[in-house]
Image (tube, rainbow, N blue to C red; front, side, top):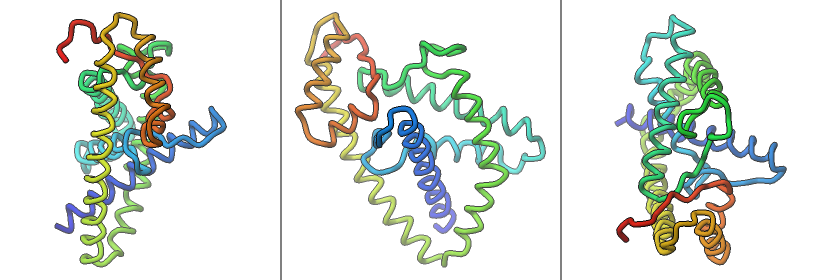
Length: 219
């Protein structure tokens, strides 16, 4: 139980740091705060999953610096690619698109993001993760487990609410049975703007999302 609690807290820490990185980048580009990610809370789970994937798959094989760098790129890129693909299939929209960037693969991943993944993964393996493990080891076992349980409950609730919102957005997209995806997007954006703050957040978090063609699909 203590081991699970430790890794879940690491997942939350890296998900938060990923969210913070996204917020800082958006703040730099747009000069305003945007709550990035699909979840309401300040976390981007894709970062947490990516880091845990790196830690589990690399394990103790940290003697090869270049190997850690390349494996980090591979693990994070595969995760980002299939996350993009699955979310597009489920929610009928592409939420990020690198088609206009050089050296991209189907617009889902690109060299511009792959290299930072490698650098961040290397930084985490050699510096950040040993530090976080040391800090978590200081926390008494019972407190560590209680903290993890509380965060698991919050995380589950956030996922339920956020998935409900995304399902309603998906339903709104599928309502517009026309062949013009740009027109569908305008209607969906208008619908989001006329909805609650939680829906506004999705529009602001992914302003460049693209509607997947929904003609001839079953409702």
